Image 1 (tube, one colour):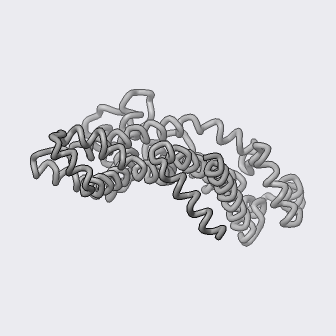
Image 2 (cartoon, one colour):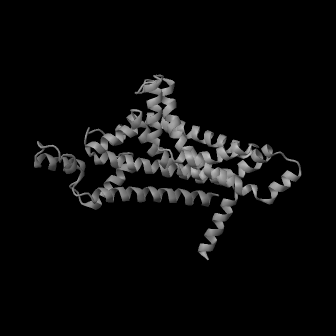
Image 3 (cartoon, one colour):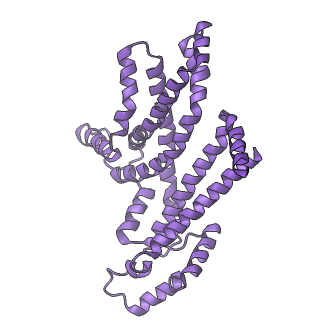
Length: 318
């Protein structure tokens, strides 16, 4: 088990390092350094000011020096300084990340609950039309764009019915509606994978044995099918974290919520590359951390993963 944990942690560290390297190389591939790009629309910026700012932010250093200097800063929790405000990038992110975390975590919990309800009703229902309806719900939900659903609900609830504000006012609906919009799109892949896993497990002989012994469909579903299908659903839930972050940005923009979405939009608009770079690296760290957590939970649900991982390692060594 300890070898499995060490391998997963090492893989996660490598992924974050590669993500940082890719972002750094992408910035270096730009036609100009970030300071020159940021000041390109400022007619009053003279060459002396640009040179002074390059020196201050370290963009006049050789590439390798910049690479290791920025990497050392990240390891120490320093993501650099924003060009638009001069404030530390970490401070700019810390100011707004609470709102995004509230939205994203609430949407994730609601999405998992929604997926479980859809799969449970679709699996246990005796009525063919209800089963058919719920099985086809996930493909329909995943095809609905987040921004479109958000704009439709905003038009109906805020403009037509006047039961919520166009802008966040601290009311229940101003938080519940963005959570619902985000969760609908997020729950679809989780439900689809869970449906497929349960259908596969239902074909196994032990399910027929349980039915022959008189076990009810509900008992088999909650006691065996759901438990055995959980690892697949957990994997797809970890992967959808990337979708969750992207969806949060769109949802915050549609509902005019202050958060990472607004911060990213503003950073892109003014071409504040250090701020964009910090946000991308933070997103990569969050995505890798969640998937590492999923990898560490997996063996608790299916201990065969440990033996399969050890067998693969021995095969490679041989």
